[in-house]
Each structure stands twice: as structure tokens, then as C-alpha cells.
Image 1 (cartoon, helix red, strand yellow):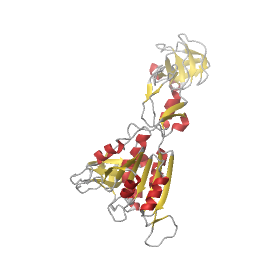
Image 2 (cartoon, one colour):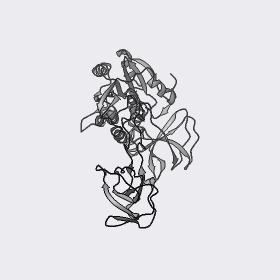
Image 3 (spheres, helix red, strand yellow):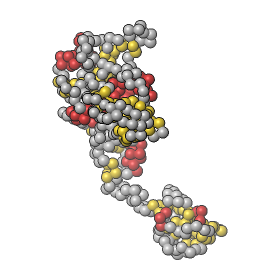
Image 4 (cartoon, helix red, strand yellow):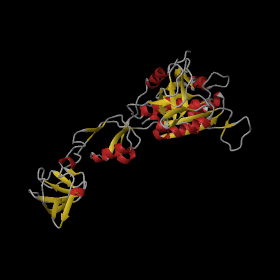
Length: 397
């Protein structure tokens, strides 16, 4: 079976999948979720003209002064009367303008003795210091679009627009299966065993996108053990296995999936690290077989598992977005596979990490970026622009 190009593999990953149903949740519970519908403003913001500065409110064009102070408008405590020429109202930032007022003299440019205000230097009253009614948004405006992620600013915007709940996509249930006779959760291990790390790493990466993220294993390299783990996780929307997806004598994930009744979508992708990635489906469940080396597991989870979870939860833009950065050090040419280089972000430059073995966790833990070099790319010199994924937040800005 030939290697599948990365963009084709990502396209096929989502083929045949269906977004999960939607649900209404209280506003504060919508953080990190994806909107099922556009959010339309129920009110104007601001609802009336407001002052953008502390100072004095007065009629536009009433520039010379002096002005007589006839009251005060504070945030939450508006002035109830109206203004005539030669009059002003003391006003605070965010307070409603009195009836008739349309300009602000900022406090720094005002001199006051008793109830008389004069221009004390600088600019006079300005209409530019008024926050006009509905300048941010008007009732009926679409303020957030379906498929977008709800983070803290979006929560604030929805609340300001008059909403107390939002319709969002349900989060998928996830199960992660650690595979391998060499793996153990024990604190003290003989030399032929290693700590099981991939399952917890992938579970931690994915937990914010899942309503339930279970980890099973380590599971032995036997058909019965794998079939038992698959049966235990059959109710998950997404099952991720780590290890056992290559072509060795003990790599049993693919035959176990076939025996379990899953249909192979594709296997082996033209990327480095991460070539032995496997995608299969059984009913509404998608199964992602990750490689066993930690860097390979991380890269493929970043490029495939996280986007799959976002897509199922209703994201309109599920895949990570690359940014353009200048290289801090040169990179070699690539061959028949696209390469994802672990790198640090230093003074605005993408600096490749020298250690590139796919089993090296220290290099992975030090990385801020994955530099993406396409198939057949020429060697890149220091200072050249390259595409890179910021790996914090799963690559979603």
C-alpha cells in the first residue's frame, strides 16, 4: 500500500463522519465548545451614547465656555435632566450622556471653580470622545458564527449581546488504548520494560475536547487482549490506540481491528515522524491507530486526533493553522515524506531541535513548534521563511 499524502489523509479522515448532536448549555459551560448556530445580538451595545473619558458633557459646538455645572452623570447613575448652551454635566467614563449632550471636554483640559468650568488648555470639547449608541453591535447583528470556538472573549461578547445560554455541539467520548508488552505503569521497572507514556499524553492532549476521556492499558500484544480492550471501549465516539500499528510480528492492531469488524479507511501516511498511522471505522466509531514512538504519537495525534475531535464537536475549522516564521538554523532537504521538525520559538525565530529521534521525549517536551516541510523541499537556510504549527492549544490560535 502506497503512502498517502498528508493533505489527502486529513481530507479522508473526516469523510463519512457526522457531527454529534447539539445541546443548549449555560453560558459559562460553553467555554471551549463550538457554536452550533450563529449568535445574534438581542440588544444594542452600547444601548445609548456613552462617554469614553472622564470630564464634562456639553452640547457640540458650545466650545468657548465658560460652562455652568448643573449635575453629574456616573456609570450606572445617569443625569436625569437636559442641557442648554453654556451648561455642562460632570461625567465619568462609561456614563450615559445627558439629553442634548454630544461632546466631552476631558478632565485634564478643564479648569473648575465651584460650579463654573473653563477651558484650561489643550483641545476643547470633542464629539470623538462619545461612544455612540450601537457602535459595537446593533440588535439583530450576527456577533458570532456557527462552528467557531467559544473562548473567554466570545463568552463576554455573547453575554453582552443578551445571551445566557448557547447551542453548542456535544463533545465526543474518547478512549485511548496503550498497546505493548514492553509497557508498564509500575514505578520500578526491569530494563526490558518502559513506562507507559503515550496513552496519558494523548489523553491529556484530548481531554479538553472530550466529554469523557478514558485510558485503557497497557494492553498486551495479543489478539485476545486487544479484542477485549476494543470491546471495552466500543461505546466511544473515537478510539485511539498507541503502538502496534506498524508491520512487525507483534504489531496486531490492524488485524485485531479487522477481526473486530472495523473497516480500514487508510494506513500509512507520507509524514516523518508518524508514517504507520491507521484510520478505521466501525459503525459511528472512528479508530485512530497511532505509532508507538512518543514523538510520532504526538505528531499524529496533533494532526489527526485533535482535528477529528474538533470536527465531531462542530468546529468549522478543525485542522491546526500554520504560521510563517523565519528559521533560526538551517534544515536539510526532505525526501518522499513531509517532515515535522520539533523546534523552539526563540526571539521570533523557529529554531529546530537537534535531537530528531522519534523516541526522544526530552526534545518533544522542549518544543514550542512543529516546522512543516513538504515532500521534496530543498534545504532551507537560516532566515528563510517556513510554515510552523504552534503546538500550544492544539495549534488553534
